[in-house]
Image 1 (cartoon, protein in one colour):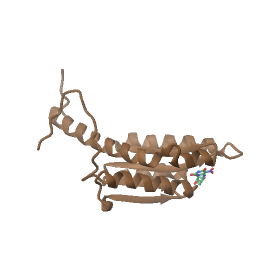
Image 2 (tube, protein in one colour; image 1 turned 120 degrees about the horizontal axis):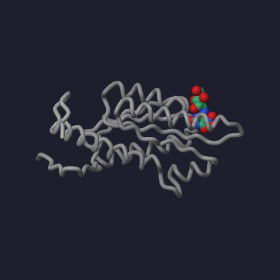
Image 3 (tube, protein in one colour; image 1 turned 90 degrees about the vertical axis):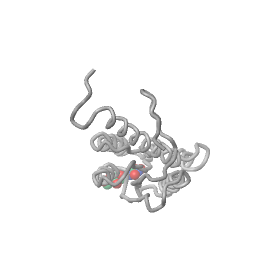
Image 4 (cartoon, protein in one colour; image 1 turned 180 degrees about the vertical axis):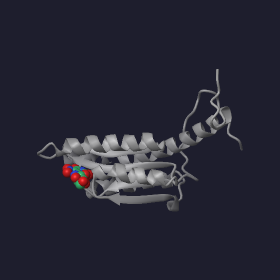
Length: 175
Ligand code: INI
């Protein structure tokens, strides 16, 4: 059934059926990242994504997430990506560089490609803080990222459809 769009009111539902997702996950601090990954995939599949429509790519550390995400986006195969990492503060300033460049790189990849990329990178002072966000007191940020990916995939599809209805490619509608 054709979906009715109300002018100026768009939202993304939480059904993942028919969408394709890519998950990029860092092996650094894998005790945490594998729990985030399991929860993200669980969210996608519980919402109806087919397991063959969810690809998982591992990279060494969080710093490598942006390039892998950019390359996945360039395949044109996915409706949304999820980038998963865990950066823990150490004794030096290394943490700050890894955090800021990972966030900056992922946002750049997202804006350059136009593909939604979820930022599921924990940036914590302690292991305890990370554990709490990977399935303990603070819930699981991987599950939240899975839901956000579905919502953004849905929203992107709707906005694309709405845009192609009101403005044929290359002919922006004038007021
Ligand atoms: N990578 C992480 O994902 N988390 C960390 O906590 C971390 N620390 O603390 O060093 C980390 N470093 C590795 C980095 O992401 C790169 O893989 C490495 O520098 C090679 O480019």
